[in-house]
Image (cartoon, helix red, strand yellow):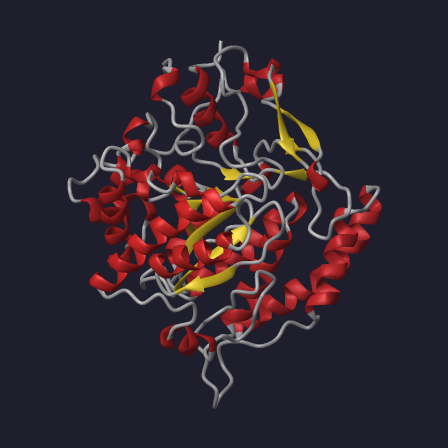
Length: 418
């Protein structure tokens, strides 16, 4: 099953969760040939470059005998909205489709690249509208659910626009509940950290805010390009009645419902009864203490030291499980998201358990499926990349990538393993 180079759109078709050491659009094995012999360079700390190793021979050999058991999705519905919901389990808001129409007016042949001159590319669910996802040969739901998800993107955050590769800046819709429309459009820079920053209520406001920021940083020539597109965007938004405020009334109303900020700072909203105080309780450790415990775990020099530090995390996990028993589901979700945002393979199993349990109890089952794709159970083959630390310390970090995802990637990029 060979894939022609001309049929491949770099990164946009690859359903994987990006490592913070690997810029979006720069993936392993881009050329044809024996994948295990290839390397790429990715931007490291302080602008330096670190070597990014590709698929280890042992993993490639294992691909010869292992296959993906998950069944493909049914044929794609003709209706675009239904097609997106089939693959991503959520509905897109009206501003999503209107923004596509806006970009189509700018560049009819390739709307997804309409903003490329100003550093933006439409990705994620936009790949359904562009037809890019039609090129994918394997159609498992788990692979679509992690399509264009960066390392720190929790289930609540869905990437829709890619920015620069150096910081891995990207924008996405943020939802509190998968059955509801997004609360706002936010941004994250995965090479910098896990912080998710709300930008505006809709995609027009978010891109407009991005333009305002970029105009203060770029050269006069690029500033003119941005100004021209921004004028067109503002005119379109006004005509279609999309507000451009960076903090709308709806966003402020949501802020009042946030029970805790979590490590990603975008806030956690769960059903909470203020009178009975049922729905959420604080974790027994403050964020700064929890981060210290987690950092000690990942920096442990041996298994005995790691077990000792992990033992300090266990009472916090137990407290979250007890909170679930007493209907404070938000506590388990907070801890699961904190472990997810901190990063580290050692926490994957615990984070997945906490997240799946909380999402199931909150009836946010779609998020549970996404979490399972981001944090594959049973520590199926993981690939190590570069150096990374949530606090800036030197340590080895791993990509959240399961063997089925790896097999899918190899099959798409270089054909079957020989």
